Image (tube, rainbow, N blue to C red; front, side):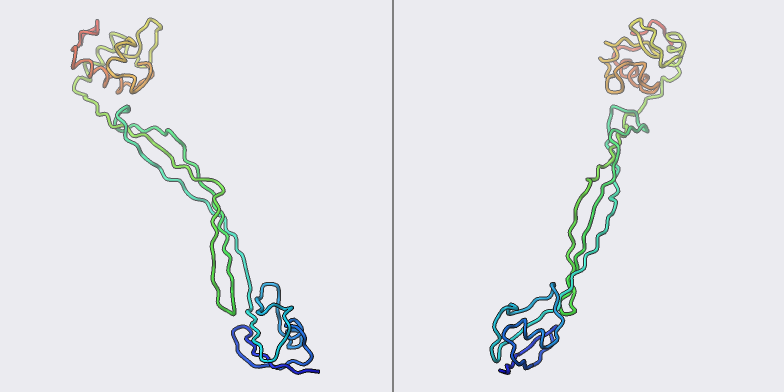
Length: 216
């Protein structure tokens, strides 16, 4: 049988070996007792014919995968608005956490490891949006408005008597809208006491207390 000399590099270790009667690289690997599995890289290919003095490279490769699932916290975004009184907040969109899966693939070649990360978003994060009021209340006429409200509505700021007038200061819808009340609520009685007084102050700057039959 023919004996063939091979320059072998197995797992990055160099050596010169001899095989007898091996016709292919696969035969030489078996004869040399080399451990080779499906992840390992063999060059030239196992079916290649063995020739004297050829080089045979076997890179020992292992591949491991680790999967980690995580939750992504949402942020709270605050948006200032003059359609609400200062100090008042309103959530206009609820937050939702995101879901992410990361797959870590570690490939080790001849003892040297490298890791690739694949990120998959299973559910997108949705940030929470909160409106924050910026309108400041002029409280200099607070007592006067309380007195007018007591006369107009018995001091009941959420009243709706179905007579075309609403809230503690008995705004008509047309007056409420003309003074910018729609920024706070569609109907005066749906607005807070502070918001109703804020709108009344705006109307006062134009017309004083003339729109009200009750006077402070």
